[in-house]
Image (cartoon, rainbow, N blue to C red; front, side, top):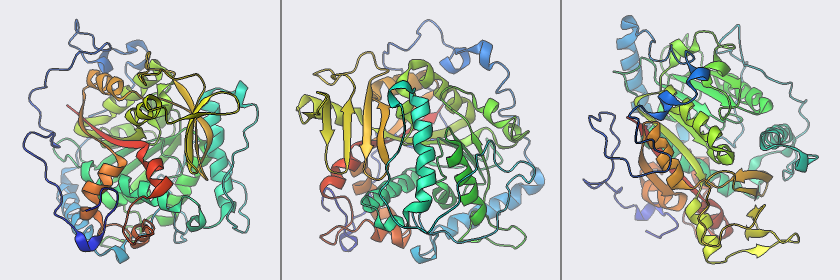
Length: 474
């Protein structure tokens, strides 16, 4: 198989884990010795998530793990989950359209009839769709903080998307499909239910955006979805997307073209707020009903938290306190190794302001300050750059995530690294197994000019900028 593409007729056997490779398992009786870390407190055995900001978070998570298990419904739940597993093997033409395709219209069904969605803003009226490449219009950028810019950017994306037209005309349509395939693979491989820990099969989506991963949650067969995002218009759009596709449960059997899970959505900042503070005022009882969850997902977002160590620690507190033992933290972030290689090999130019910049016709990274010549960022926090992705991200501030720093911090929060690969490697290793499972339009949207499937040209470098990771709570 080619190192950057896939052709079905040459499908190899999926790669199997070697005995000494890390495997997904929730039953850990011992922890391997943690590598030395500047963030570890070797004098205290208590994990960081039990020590951090106790005066602030004490009592907020007390209800986690107290969810009652309904024995009367336990057998029905297991039967339904077995049905779901069988339905995941259905041919791709039976599956729902992918995130970028037009969704079937249906009247809204509120997941909580008296609450609906937390903190929504009004969305502007739709106009006749006509595709236009996205460009944000954020004024006074130099006087805004990162949170304000990110919130304004994604709210504007939500508004403008309604006037852009079909995304099949987007200049990054193939790239979007490739990224969606990666997320299907990561969630499909690593979101697992732990019935001995929790009654509900639940997922917490931090920085959920417009609900672009709702289809993927249906793909893995969850029972409960909780989405939180800083952009209120995006949260409103996510709720509307869910409502249109929400299955009616008065008929027996599973509707393959609907969302067969309950969901709630709330506006909040998971880098500065704690999850109970975001959810409980809007969804009383949700913590007791749905937590701890089986998986936490943070897609293309964790890098915003690396503005400061405090934000990263708040995020990791939310992750570890929300997860059941054996649960997984799954995410995608820019690769610090990729950034380092560009700097060390001097594959960059300087813009008209003299700033270091690298990229191509589809994406670019521009540093506010000159990066270190060896590509090693120290201190690890606050290393800002502006990221541009054609038709998606318009020079929004992001922060370098030195991965070893992330790994060391996660270990303090009882999160052990199980998986880390760049997008190209994930695709090459896993797509043979997923090729027949993914939506046909998504697959065809990844066809290259040579008839194979995968990324090519500038798209390949743009997706190579990212890695996928999985941590497991022990």
